[in-house]
Length: 487
Image (cartoon, rainbow, N blue to C red; front, side):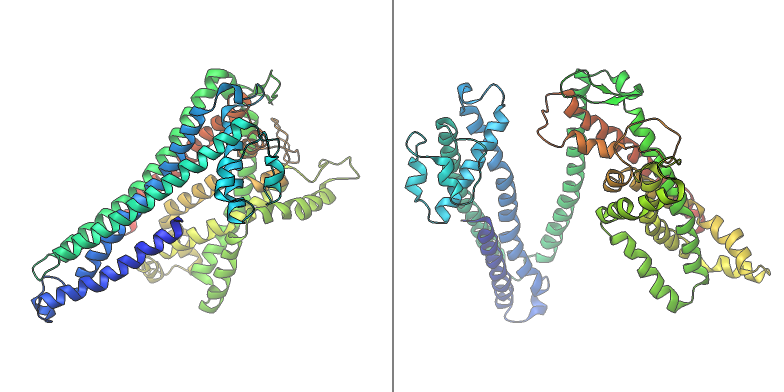
């Protein structure tokens, strides 16, 4: 049974449990809800949650674990002779999955029966052509080992799905019956439901924490693998970035870090003054009608996809800068892709980040401080300069640092606006690149994750993660350290 139908059945059972649990509690109390320990709805929610939560939890774990178990089992059964010298076991397993999915599609479309798919032999049938008829394109012919592994893959998956359906429905039914049997007038349903909700909240928080931990660990392990193949000293202090999948690569990160910080600096020089001035105007000077229109329009910039900003940099800002600073190919700017192009467009993208955060922080300054300043005879501009901005400064600095971490992690604007050259240069009209852009380029195509040229992407990601994490922690430290002085 498909997982979608399984979820719908469990949800329907849960809804029925809510109604029956509520009715049973009222019947046990003689129809008088005042005789119940808890409100009637709590008894219904108790039955509904007991039917829903354990079953959906089991379903989620099963959906994650089953593909891993099946794939590891099939991969272990593949003979070494089925793996070409130019390939790897993981690449062969990707062919196995495609063939298995193709057979499932052919059966669902009626192109072959279940028995045909299970007994198909590559010696007598052109498997590639048969699957192409149902829209499954394979890059090479399917040999006997791959076809047999795909058939075993389908068989194990089918058995696993059947067991999952039985287990999930059984758990849901047991939870339903158990909760309904406990329902009476003296049952503390409210306490149990609130404890269950608290457990769900803790589980949700744990998922977020464990996901972050998993990301960090994956970066750490692959980074350590990279440093087994390439010197850490050459990586962190090398001044040349010249990867070569044929060998002899120079993977110094300094040119990439320089490009990242240079572009981010120009972006902040654009975004901080404009964003801060607009925040001061909207919070202190703008009439209510103007603010109600201008603030949403300003924040529309935050919803524009970064690829659109990248196209704007490539097609509009870059050529415009060439017209201004170039002179028939002999000016200081030779091409539209440059640090200045990416920095200006990225600065425009960051304006709503700085503006919105700064506006909220300025509005959080107590009105009593404004009134006290006006009472002493200060003008509005003096109050803004000498009272409001100093009071809001820690939060504004935090907003700027958060915007900086956003700029450091940007990719598409850099790829389209700044070029791909890794160099150490002070000229803002030169083409440069950043850490994120090179992570994309190193993992694009058929990357061999046993090579330093592919694993370097994880080292770059770990470096970027540490930098942005440091900026975010520093920003939060500043905000929390000084905020309580004005509350």
